[in-house]
Length: 312
Image 1 (cartoon, helix red, strand yellow):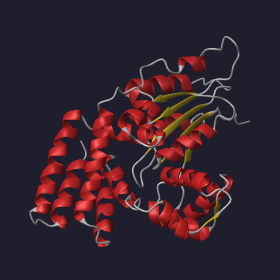
Image 2 (cartoon, helix red, strand yellow; image 1 turned 90 degrees about the vertical axis):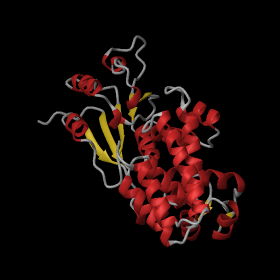
Image 3 (tube, one colour; image 1 turned 30 degrees about the vertical axis):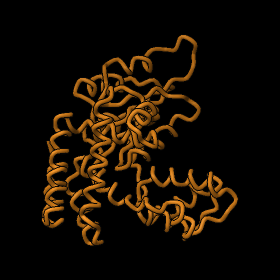
Image 4 (cartoon, helix red, strand yellow; image 1 turned 180 degrees about the horizontal axis):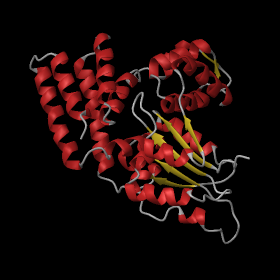
């Protein structure tokens, strides 16, 4: 008879918001400890392997598991030789577009637990938005959901934040495309935010595809550069903060709107040293000067995006 799987789960996918939400759902009523893979110190698994003094349920969620060091993977492998059947362990691994779960993590977890992809297909996104909105008490139909996606883009965290805004502003009222346009006018820069996510996430192919899409839509190069410059300034502020500062405090200190945004920017900022971020700021200044001097966006912007997103 096959032994039952241990409560160990590897979740992988492109979106950090969806991964964290799916990860927390794995714990049920257990309030897990949470650690960023890039900040692994050693010994984090000890609480799971050691019986609790008072018998309270325990759990651990590792975010950004892709950043776990070789020593951390060795520690994880040793724990997984005999994982606690009553202590859930969840690893969340964000990957690049069309990427796969890291082979080392997949092999470790698959032997004793489950490996699951977390994603929303594009054709399922608008129904997902409708479902989330209705659960939040927002009367949003298919047309309103389509307008929300077209206005803000396909990033689930942004869409959920928008639903929360609608719940406060239009409780008990049918949310039409006109209301979406009124409420979120000026936030159509989401496509530029997508470009920034890919570029500062070091996903060069996706960043170039995003840039080409914006160029085909005839977006003003100075507008695109403004979005990149804004994201870069945010990352410089985040990079200057202590690495282990909780996301809520990072958001407050850096002037960000949401905790999930702070988590994402922390991950992106770690792709660069402060010196590299400041050097990129100089590149942005040069690009701005070039565009205002008559250089064309189809030359200036690809070079800048390539400088940002190029592998280390």
